[in-house]
Amino acid sequence: MNTLLTIDERNAVLLSMAKLVEEERESILKANKIDLDNYSGEDLAMEDRLKVDNSKIEGMVHSLKHLASQDDPVGVERFSFTHENGMQVYNKTASFGTVMIIYESRPDVTVEAAGIAFKSGNKILLKGGKESLNSNLRIVELWHRALEENNVSPNWVEYLQFDRKQTQEFLASPNQQVDLVVPRGGERLIKFVKDNSSAQVIVSGRGNNFVFVEKNADTDIALDVILNGKTGKISACNAIDKVLIDSALPNKEEFLKQLQKALSDNNVEIIADKSLENVEGSRPVKSEDEWYEEFLDYKALIGEVDSVSEAIAKINKYSGGHSASIISRDDKAAKKFMETVDNAAVYHNASTRFTDGGQLGLGGELAISTDKLHQRGPIGLQHLVTNKWYIHGNGQTR
Image (cartoon, rainbow, N blue to C red; front, side):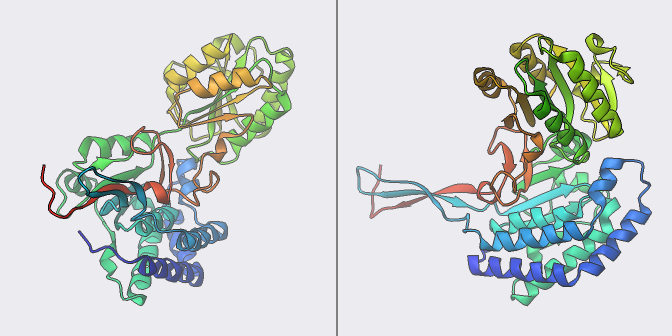
């Protein structure tokens, strides 16, 4: 295991990296253009994640500077007591050691997720997708410059240029220490990593998020939340795919017309469950599989339920365990929904697009976990640590 860098060393590297990303903006954009030109364009969501523009560069720089300003997450005392025999007992946060991040098409992960893992005192192994290779290699060159500028070994950030078979072999039997693996991508990637990794895996799971328009909903809020969740960013794991409408919604037919028009105006394909098959321009659900599917596309499936309990049951059956929102003026119904829906983030009268480390006050995220251990939802700087017991005695035996 690497000797832990001091907090001053880690912060200095992050600030150097922020400066280099800003200075080398054009070379990053140029490398990314090669990746974009090489990409087939067959997957809209992947292309969206692959593209780096000035706004994404600014996000990278902001993220690095913000990380450098945050407190050290390592060595934080969580618990202490004096044993009856006089020993002093402490529990403190500790770095994992080496974190491997496997990801698809997102060059910003090479900056932001790596930055969070580095600030948390970890060595970083990066394995990006072939579609973003030029962008990733350019950014890793900048990491190595930032490390060397501060007299820190470039080995703290390593890029693994492996094909699928090499990746599979490395996961199963790594030739160096790997303490934690974080897959960032679709279900196929996550399954591949879980099936092959000999190290602990944090699952950054699928979205397939739901909005439930309860009978006491403000339908203007419902329309805004659904449109924002569906069309704001189709490649995001916090996007909306499913809309459940309470059969007792007083103005249901009028709301459905407004929703149909708003979605159609934004080129969203509407899939209607059997009770709503009269929605204009919609097509029926092909099979139950579509209820489970994360679309990452301009598609929305609309269904009808007769109660809050039925909505909860449907979400708990089909969703990815990520995010769900209830639109309602009834606080009691909202409380029941929020306490019973088994998702990492639950919303009342707000968009699921806020399930994001930056938006939820963490300053950024390594991933959004749909696992329940060791952290659920956005994994920020303070969560990317394990813990360690420190016991001080003067000869005590048991």
